[in-house]
Image (tube, rainbow, N blue to C red):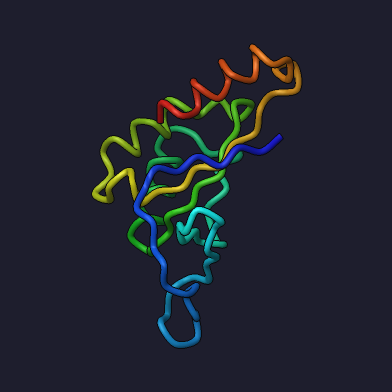
Length: 117
């Protein structure tokens, strides 16, 4: 199961045309939020490598980050987000729920731990 977690402003304009704006391609979600289609995967990143990759991605315009509880770098990612020069409302986080957490109550707990970022 993949979770998409976003808090942010709705945008009613059309998706970015990367050939005209230089921005990454994006899509308008059903709720009107513009979501980038290109993001940074965080698998295998930790410590200074994660911090450097996150900061570099932010400076290059990335706003979508893909993580998972199994990556065991959630606390480091949380610190990166808290120290980020970009508002949390502009960031998208995708995550995966661990296989043993698919029961209803377990899924809710897993979701709450992810959304705290």
